[in-house]
Image (tube, helix red, strand yellow):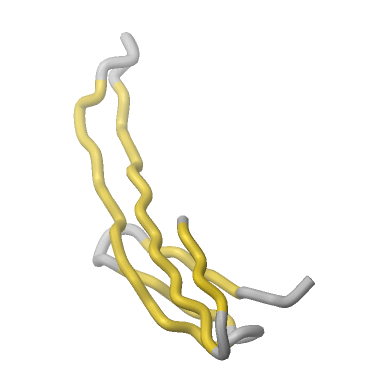
Amino acid sequence: MSLAMARFTDIGAQFWVNQLDPHGVVISSERLKQTARVKNGELTYLDNGNLALLIKVSPL
């Protein structure tokens, strides 16, 4: 995940979810790769069909 903050926050999300067999071998995988410009303090939903991500950026 990458964040670039200004008036709005630019988010770059890239995650992999792998399904393993009992021996630890990857049998399937899905990738979520998405970018978004979000308003600080607002809950944002990123979705690629099978995987989703909720993000809320708040100041420290």
